Length: 291
Image (cartoon, rainbow, N blue to C red; front, side):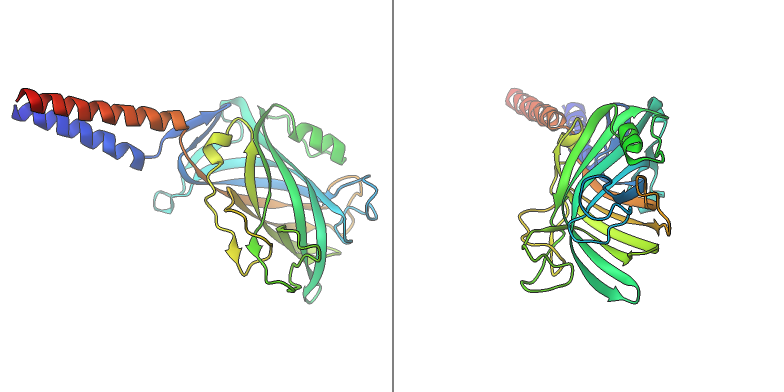
């Protein structure tokens, strides 16, 4: 009798411990785990070429111009400082790569930031993350060529810009005269030099959507953007260089980005865990009745 109780207790303790352990997840050959993770990305950005808006000089320097870009995920890491942020997947693993195509970010306003720097607030924004065969991505001399290589394979995630804060009415910093939510902000020169950016994203679809549609990251009062309808699924930061003489049809900005995520197991996995625990409870009641 004591041996049976001990075995049952050990089994129950094991089941209860499962949610606290990171679960390995693979979607289209891309490995990650549940919990906090982040990705590092190579980025290429510019004014959308040939859209009839602005001056087609490759740089975002006029209201209404649209930002377009591509990128490649280098690594997915666990956000686990104690264990050195171990690599969960890197480009080429399983013969796969993750590439990014983003577009429809509209320059809503410009504000001086001090010196030669200018703050730009963007509205809108759509992002596609594609899983495809490794080695296909090529940020070529033209936007069209680079976008073609960044948007092949299978659609792993689709996202849209999410408000990055709740701005006080009438504030001009990253403000929006149309009261449209600011989803991306950048600080840097309009001519050339170092540029930094940050933004929020909401998951809208894709093969991995069930793992990342978590509303983890808060829309912060006091930061730009209005209104704050819900929390975001991803937050990202970027930094890099705006070239002095960009190719108008290519990429004016070259840099890196980091995306913060919180991943969850597929709901079916959680349901199976619940069934297992219910079975343990039923077994315990039967044994108690027989005793």
